[in-house]
Image 1 (cartoon, each protein chain N blue to C red):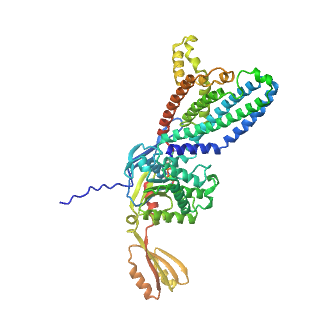
Image 2: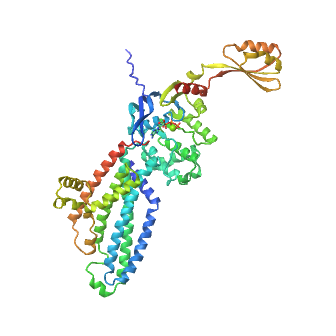
Image 3: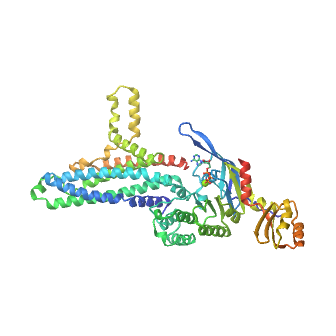
Length: 268
Length: 319
Ligand SMILES: Nc1ncnc2c1ncn2[C@@H]1O[C@H](COP(=O)(O)OP(=O)(O)OP(=O)(O)O)[C@@H](O)[C@H]1O
Ligand SMILES: [Mg+2]
């Protein structure tokens, strides 16, 4: 295994031993309980509601994992000075950044997989108790594989968010990094609006500024295809490919920038 | 014709005018010199002590060598490689001051992780982990998470991990700190074994007696400046500062009569005295006089300057 692999595996081990995973299992159980209750309240719509609720919950919990682990891994290493030992080993600093990132992505993936299994388990349970009338009425299958497409894009979106969090954490404190990452996340959902700003305001300065922001901020809205998946609208392979390619480029730029910052840092 | 091979003396550590300014102050940053034009050469195979009072710049120097901070001016080489070269790090071990490790790992897992970073295979990692943890006296606790380790135990793990790659050069920042007397003895033994293996040991310390028993050379730093450096024997051995004479069966009156010829008189017991004689007066005459008056000679020892005397004097000059 390469140094990068070792750093990634150790980062994964750190977050697993941080007990985040166990909180998520708790979340999965919570989700089951909540959606079964909701299912009884809304006859006929229960599967759609469970899918909607499940995907939203996954998105929110995934965001929390991405941000709170993402901002911490590098910071803790520096704050507790374990970085002194790590950097005395034959590795380069960018390997620390990229390795930590890979570890985070691994953690995130495992968590998303667990949540996905939980969601499908609940869907299967409800579909099993469904009456014939309800089965005829709904237009998508209970265990719709289209959900997996939405979950895959969600995972990729969270990978972008993780890269943002890691990037900020290479030079700032966890609280500031968290604030900045959440800020970028929210702005990332509206960044498409920035392109149309010249139709709303006349100021050239504002327009230039908005254009600059449009190109620097990540565009996170395209990754969110939960409602298409729930309502049985098509999500094409081409759309998926373009979105994922965009994410890869964006992540690569962040990792290069983060490595550059980290390589110049002094550990006083 | 004999062709002489081109011998290049590659030092284990070489610094040239190494300088570090930290910037201090919250609003108005101003530089504060922590290390001032340090030029030092550590030959291979040496045990080199790096001494100096608190805040002298020892840790700063070691951090510069490890590229944890970057020099303001000057340059340095480790094992003939420029700083930051992974090739040098492959052959190097480092123990930071007050080491801290991932507290969610056990000692064994930590060693395994670092062994992996050196590219060691599984069986080799296992072997070295066990051998080194044994060597530093970490027993069954090695399965325990490091958060449950005491300060001295962490220090021991720190020493073990610095030796994982069988380094040619180890850089230790206060290796004795936090260790109990047995631990200190163990580490002294370890350093000597490393030296016998041909490993260069460069360590910072406050404990002068350790430096005195271990090092072939020392450097003394004060306020960021090098105040002395060289062979311990050159610094100390030649500087005999007097004699200690111990006599028995000696009447008190006889000793009293010596007056200022003895710089210090300590009565050890009935008729037993320890006399300190200045360097100027040859001790043979006094021994003969005392013996003629019935005193019995117990011992006569030259008093060398200790590293501590030297340290106090040089550091005092520097301030
Ligand atoms: N991060 C920092 N910012 C500003 N000044 C610093 C910093 N670290 C060290 N210094 C200053 O640099 C000088 C040297 O510190 P250093 O830690 O190298 O001393 P030392 O010789 O290792 O001392 P000790 O024996 O106490 O460990 C000190 O005056 C210290 O105040
Ligand atoms: Mg120090």
